[in-house]
Amino acid sequence: MRLSLFGFELSATKAAGLRPLSSSSRGGWYPIIREPFTGAWQQNAEISGPTALSNTTVFACITLIARDVAKLRLRLVQHDDEGIWTETTNSAYSPVLRKPNRYQTILSFIEQWMTSKLWQGNTYALKERDGNGLVRAMYVLDPKRVCPLVSPDGSVYYELRRDDLAAVASEIVTVPASEIFHDKCVPLFHPLIGTSPLYACGLSALQGLTIQQTSNQFFAGGSHAGSLLTYPGAISNDQAKRVKDYWETNFSGVNAGRVAVLSDGVKYEALTVNAVDSQLIEQLNWTAETICSCFHVPAYMVGVGPAPPVANVEAMLQAYYSQCIQSHLTSAELVLDDGLGLEGTPYGTEFDPDDLIWLDMQTKTKAASEAIGSGAMSPNEARKKYFGLGSVKGGDTPYMQQQNFSLSALDERDSDAPFAKAAAPAPAQATPELSAGAAPVAALPPVPGAASARVEALALALLRKDWSALSA
View 1 (spheres, rainbow, N blue to C red):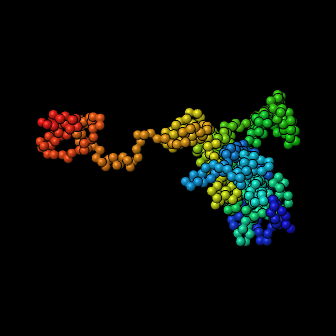
View 2 (view 1 turned 30 degrees about the horizontal axis):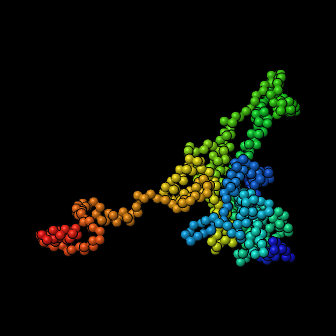
View 3 (view 1 turned 180 degrees about the vertical axis):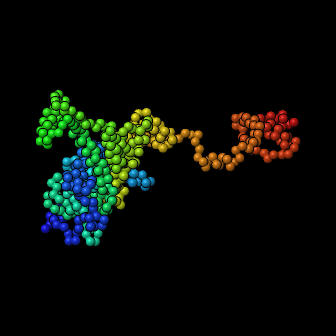
């Protein structure tokens, strides 16, 4: 059976020889059920994605990373002859980067992309092409409804289950890898299957939930862990049961704190365990810190512990960027470049990291001043980057101060003996004044001795038309 998807003829069943990834194929895929201890599945204590997401720290880490990546502007850039990537536009690629599909903005699309990757370990996005084969829309799919397939010759396909929002109308559709964007977390077990950080911190997430559930039950019971009723003599089991039921009905839960009247020497003793003895807060903080370490998120950014004593916020955000989200950004850029067919062209996709850090006015002014003063930026470049202002006349050229010299010029100066004593200059001679209409006299060659002085005197008299001097 054949069907058409976005103008392409696709197989409705698996091609011959295609195998879904399982525990027996090249290292295998981790099992669907995660048991924190043997028999946990039978006791409904397995770790699942939705259960782990209900942990506040897990939720905070995933949403923090996803939203921070989504708020970085995704740009189409062009590689010039000098190796510089400059933002540009192109009718073939820019529209899908501005509006990825009919129901999402680019921000919500990237946020869903990152949420799927962090929670499930994999992001699968289906391509919709136009008549020219260019990608005109992208749809993030439910990872639980996508299965990678590998043929005997190593070709990769993806089996898609029905997804009406992504226009996958058939129950099962097999598409080649060229029609899927696939972004993975760390592929621990198979190169086509990414592993979510929940694989490492799922038990800590479950432990934190158990601590919170136990605390909830404790406070719901009137903050009493238990109690003892002591009789002076022996009583039967039936009597003990009746007293126990009577006490739980009338003096526990919502009735805690009511006055009880005891007789016949019966004594009441409360059994309580305070939070200090049980190290409740320490255990809860430990689970939260473990979860943060698996997501590579600084703990203070999700409200776990105080912020480091650093006055420079930019340095903290730079550490968060390089240790946590930079790898996700690079991976998404490469997947988009390959999926949009940008390989081999001068174009590429790039997230703008400047959107992560909004500097205060004092820091921006200092950075702009130093960039212009060092010649690293022109005034117009600094205005645009740090203040979002337009260009001004004469601001397109970087400036340097005139007293700065190159090393080669300084070396040339040093090679000419700069500390040698300079010779005294010769005294300047008075230039004779020529009268109007007088023709200049060519310089005479030097004559030694007294004859030289006589010749100079005659030449001067001739210029001045001093006939008496000439006759003498």
